Amino acid sequence: MAKKPLNIGLVGYGFMGRTHSNGYKRAPDFFPELEYTPVLKAVCGRNEEKTKDFAAKWGYESYETDWKALVARDDIDAIDICTPNNTHNEIAIAAAKAGKMVLCEKPIARTTAEGAEMVTAVEEAGVANTVWYNYRRIPAVSLAKKLIDEGRLGRIFHYRSNFLQDWTINADLPQGGEALWRLDAEAAGSGVTGDLLAHCIDTAMWLNGGIVDVSAMTETFIKERMHQLTGKMEKVTIDDACVFHCHFANGSLGLFESTRYARGHKALYTLEINGEHGSIRWDLHDLNHLEYFDHRDDSLVRGWHKVHVSDGDMPYMDHWWVPGLSIGYEHSFVHQVADFLKSLEDGTVCEPSFKTALETAKVCDAVLESAAERKWVDIA
Ligand code: SOE
Image (cartoon, rainbow, N blue to C red; front, top):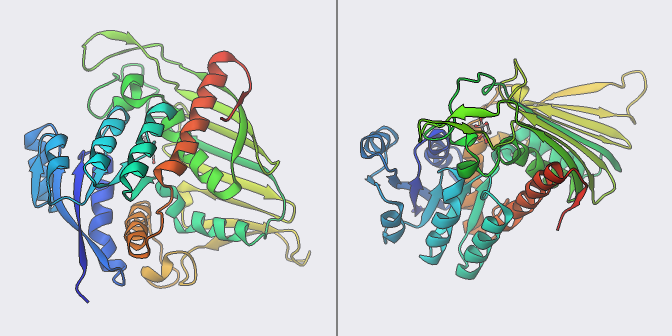
């Protein structure tokens, strides 16, 4: 069967530009049943040399240096936004208005207000959309979803999640500009809350339902850093660390922590859920294992099971190697591409849609408000 091409216009060639491009390239080989196939039509970046180089390296047919020119092209079906958070709103709205599908790197935007405008734009235009919260599509995390939905844990009491890093401890590290925009609140919106806790919140609400209210504290440990764009020492306005607790709509309690100051941890995303019958835990440093405890097991063998998520009957794994062989971080992006293509085929929504991702933005905003005002905040 001849494949239907989906012409991709990628904006941004950084770390995320690479993960998404790899996803587009790998998905057709490993998900051959899909009707659509991504075509790497054009990549866009402001630095012509680097953009041209990226296009050659990753196999894009052409390049642009102005995203508006990319959005105006008739040969582009979908705009994929991999640029700093302060650009998501403008690019996504223009793309939707031009009738393009929009795929946007997380978080949806800097604030709920910006994200809400994006939701309106894609809904008014009726274009397919998704936000790349890739960790949902790690097979072990998808398996956790299946086990919870089957009711194996029973009533849920606790949800606990961390995202720990240590790459900003050095006070000489500048803020702002290329590669370091995540340290600049103007570009990023917030620090660890929007960058890291947003992942934890997206997964948490997917696995355990909505969050009702939050109480948070944030800290900025290094108060001033050299700004790469101005060359001056400037006040740091992002949150370096954030801790919050919350109530979920199902009555369970949530506890979340994120920091870029946990010496020794590079990207330690962990989650644990405790229910009436059992518990589940997972961490990104050992991403192919899901730990599962079922109190209803025979007491002589009761204990934590360490499930190696590699068998063909486990989520996504029938598309990869043979049982016992592992996959990695990059595969979560291949899975998101495959699920997006499948959603086009089926006429369904590829979750998280912009609308779903807006719920995460609302929680992030409430967390920041709670920390700033030292009070509990209800989620609107
Ligand atoms: C930050 O270091 C970062 O790259 C995030 O921006 C990503 O979303 C996360 O998956 C890994 O860490």
